[in-house]
Length: 34
Image (cartoon, rainbow, N blue to C red; front, side, top):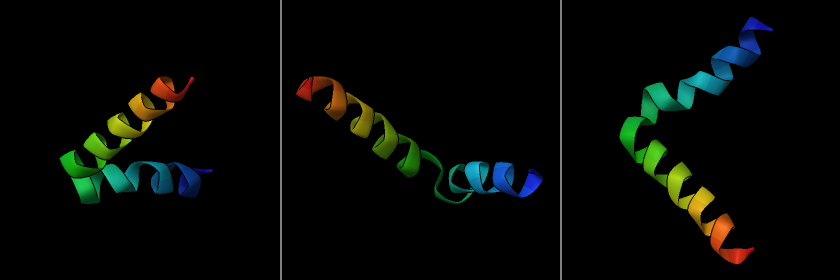
């Protein structure tokens, strides 16, 4: 269980803002398609 949580939070630690921006753009893109 702890390992899964670590995998979920790791990208934010390593990629930081760049990863965050990609996620936001991805979510916005999904909303536009609907």
